[in-house]
Image (tube, rainbow, N blue to C red; front, side, top):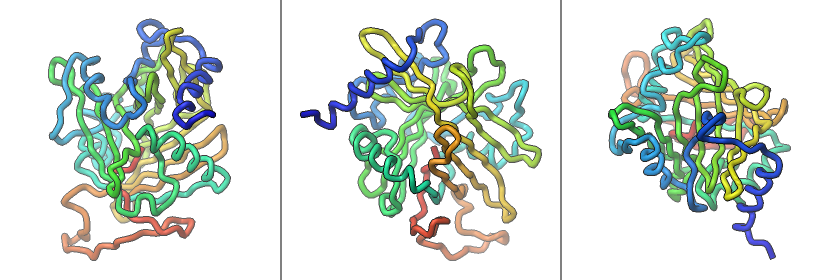
Length: 314
């Protein structure tokens, strides 16, 4: 009888059969990213990631997903064109708190719950909550810079855990990176897994109104998008997934920083996330600086009660 843990090697075998062989130290070095050596991930991949950069992990300091948003500057994007509040979020992520509302496509919600139960919670990675009560007590967020030998930030780990149980929801490695043949840097996110990872490349866009969009449209292998990479004694294999995302980070008419995140499978929307971002020290105050009454719970557009989730953006 097959146990739940037997699904992991079967899944890796599937990606080997359907993917292509890659050389992470050669032509496909752009896909080289943290992996893990055991089934349970959490934050235990951090030390190895720092070693790969020849540096250290900077625990206990404030950090951002990017040391500077200007790392994304290129022929198609200039960080100076983005509103300062947005730059602050990416450069000082640990100073920001979030609330999230979700809109699941009812066709995909059962599948999302099944994946979370069979894989996410067990391996402590990519355990996306599909029920509002799962995050009723909130989500804690921790940003840890990964430094190179010169002390400069090479990447950042962003870990999010359920406050009620301490279980990991997401544990990702964030950096800027170029795709093959492209001069414009991308936002790169890698989620380590046992003997592999899931990666996302997102194209940055500065909108005319100062808002910021990250996009992974349809394309071919080597383009923006989501990839799964698996390592085995027979070699390393990678496959581009038909998963496409759009993040739109903007300041609304009341001066509140927000993000709308849409995840699609092929062209069909699977889930939408709506985030309210508040910098610590500004939370709960009106434009005159007076304290505002706090709201314990929020309601999403589907009418599902959901508590504010802090630090839950992917």
